[in-house]
Length: 339
Image (cartoon, rainbow, N blue to C red; front, side, top):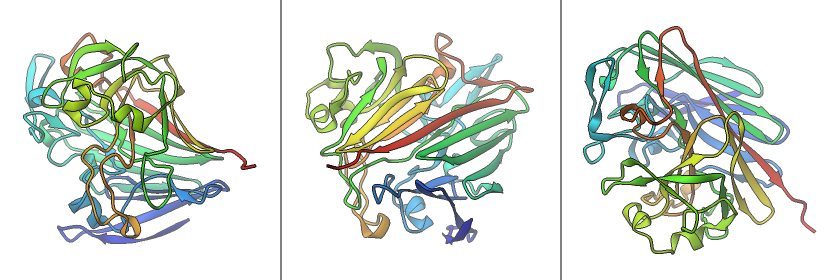
């Protein structure tokens, strides 16, 4: 079990990185944002996620990268919701909407390390009632655990009163090595419908069947071929930035990313997943000085349907006192033998 200094926050607090490892993977996580900093694939000899060499990159360059997102991932329309007859007003930090928990979500918090083993790591965060306008005190843990070529991310949340919760990890994945690019990547997502975007990027209640559209990823497609298509929904977002309503229930395979002989499979028990092709990514200070540009990586943000707190027709994201909300998302890698 290794750990080390990861830099100092703007308010003077120190951060650290912590490392877990097995025969297939080596994973580095920071206590700042419970952030997935590095996912090293030993067989392929590449890092499968984008990241920074120290915490300043996450604070000043690319917000959310690799971080745990909460209390509610994605956008809450108009920054408000009604729960048990009370209207809650939140910080509107994205075109009039609340994005990824507000001005200072879980991604910008310093988490507490509660357990570290050779192949697993658990971090804990307590969010007080009223933080960012949300009701109830919420206690959250996230566990990163390795089993062979699989990294599992398990979240647990408990609350003192009813409150919306939709946690996700915002890692940017690429299988191309030190010079990130999606040029030769293929993507597959097991979903028959997507949520449509409004002009401000908020997911509307209406869904669209993917059959016959550029968004149909049920069979593997080259990402570059998807992004060059003309569709009003692609133009709103500058690429894929859409919620896929996942098929099936329970913990199941829902997506894959492939380049050459290397495949990453995504498994989850969440009902939805936001697929984002890094349309606005722009940083010159990535890991080892790498340049991160639009469409050089892709996010698989498993979640509840965006803005579901305002839509009773969607699966509820409300956590009640006395309950534990637990979800797991995993990323599993397979390297084909080269002839």
